[in-house]
Length: 410
Image (cartoon, rainbow, N blue to C red; front, side, top):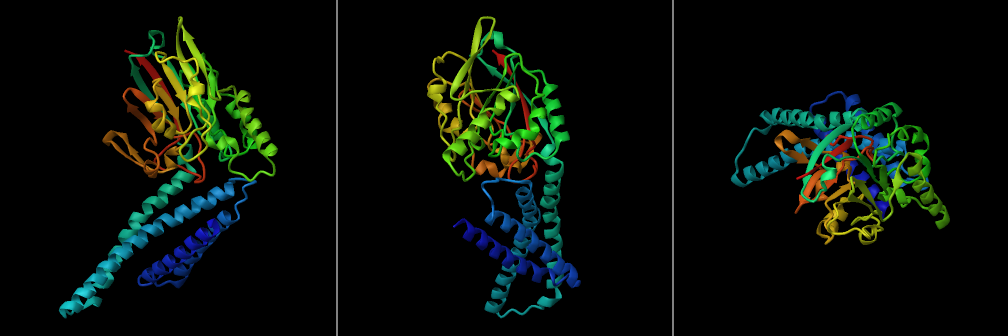
């Protein structure tokens, strides 16, 4: 079924390319430019289709498959825009022709149609250039355009001793996708420059395999140890679900080695369990659950993880998928004050202009909480936009994030 879907998509893309070719042909006289443009798209399309159809789940995502996706988006998105421009014009033209036929109204169409078509083409090319150059930036510089987002959160339930307590939140490293050691070292330095009391990582250390982290141990082990510890939970990619394993034992071995990554980089992994953080004889609860998502594995057991934690305790939950908060945690009777998640990456594509309140991403049509902070009756979630990237080898408008949260007691 998947192969048929890919082949169908390729056929549709070729049909649309023929439609674009005949529209461009009216204004571009050089046949080599026309044919070169078509050939380039066929090569990109063929490379993308080949990588999808013959994707080896035993190897997983590689730089080749990611760049095949990136190039498909780079040349495909502008084509969609151009098709829409020409299609809208042809629809209006068709209605005009029908009207003229119905009213016996004759127009000298040839006298104005070329100039109108030229205007449409230039307008379409101008608009199409926006995603084209944005995607180029995203694949070169945007994916490592790390942002430190600082946020103060006030709680009446927070013990006074924890007033000013700072949490460094990172998520979704996806070490198998990373390709620039210098940029990652810069990001680690950026983390270490922050003043924080605890560091919390909320899953997806790899894409699928334990060995993806092998060349990055020396980099991530440089993350400084916070006074109250560095903790982590697992994400959906950390269970080895995206491969066809020869045996269940092989899959389990990969999983055990993924869990063993965390102590090597100075993090304590929480698997449906909790820890109490103590200051001046006052405490808050840190709760770490395994992955729970509406579309992915449901191994997270919040009741088990919150065992021995009382309603009156101030609670921080680490749960990779924000759908867990939306479906269960925000209405849970134990009252979880702050939940930290990741997973969505903001789909690595969107527009965010905080000064004017503009926020949009395709992610919002899948996840009600897709990036940033959300409040439900005093229970807050932060959906971190992620440290790394996956599938598309870039980021446009939704930048890699390091979050520094300061808790305030009111």
